[in-house]
Length: 378
Image 1 (tube, helix red, strand yellow):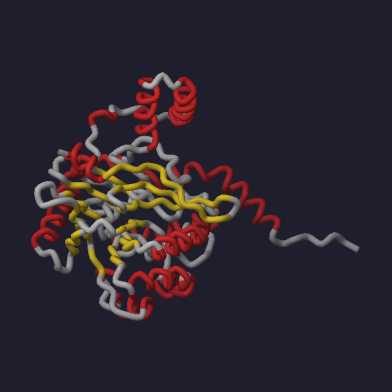
Image 2: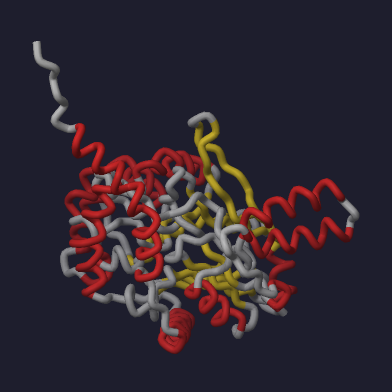
C-alpha cells in the first residue's frame, strides 16, 4: 500500500522556511515604516486638542474629569487591536489576560479609559471584529452600564469618530449610546497645586497614522496577508523595550514644556513610566544600588543592562528627563502580556498582566505617588 502523502506538508515547510528567512526583516520594516512622526505637526495637534478640551470641558473632543476624591480609581489600557481570530490577530493570545484584568478592575471600582486602537479596523471590517470579540465587549459593557467607561479613538479605530454609521454599530455592541472622544483630562490635586493628566491615543501628527488613507490601504492589503501567512506578531514582550522610539521622544518633549501636566498616550506599544523606558530605569536603579553599596543588586542590574546593550542600544542621559510622560504600552504583546497605567489610591502605576502557569496575574512594574510626581514637575 503506497504511503499517504500529507498535502499540507509542502505549505507547512515553506511557511517555516519563510518565517526563518523573513520574520526579522519584516518586523524591521513594520517598525520602520509604521510611523513617520513630524515634530511640528505633533506639537500643534496636541496643543490644539489640549486647549479645546480645557476650554470646552463637556465638548465633542473630550472631557475634563475631576478626580480629587480619594476613592476614585482609573485604569488606562490601549492598543488591543481586536481582530478576527485569524493568524494576523495580535490580540488573540492576550485575550485571557485582558478579560481577567477587566474583571479585576470592575470588581475593584475602577473607571476604565480605553485609550484607542481597541479594534483593528484597518485589517478587518467591523462585522468580523464584532463576531469574534463578544466576550470582551460584554466585559466593557459592564463599565458603560455603571458610567465608568470612556472610549477614545486611535488611528486604527478612527472609524468610531468619522463613519456616519459608527453610532449604530456602537449601540449594537454595547446596547446603548457610546460617546467617542479624542482625549480626556483628569484633574487631580488641590486648587493651589492642580495636576492635569492629559490622556489621548498619541497618533496625532504622525504622517503615516493620522487619518492617512494610504497607510490604511497598505496595512489591509499588503501587511495583513503577509502577517497572517508568516504568523508574525511584531509586538515584543511586555516591558522588554529599549530606548524610546522617536515618537515617544517627541511626546515627551511636548509634555516637558507644560506646567503641572502629565501626558499619557498609547500608539507606540512601548511602555514608558515617568518618561523612562526599561533601559533608562535600569541605569537609574543601578545608581541607587551603587549608592547603597548593594553589591548583589548592582550585579543583577548590570546583567540586565548588558542584555539590553547587546541589542545595540545607546544610552541617553536619563537624568535630564522630567517625569511627565507615560505610555500605557499595549494589550497585544506576542507573549500574551498586557500593560497599562493605573491611577489609584493617590499613586500612578505601570502594571503588567502576565500568565503564571496559564493563570492571568497582575504585577506592578513601577509606582510613584502623584504628589511626588507633581512636586518634581514643579
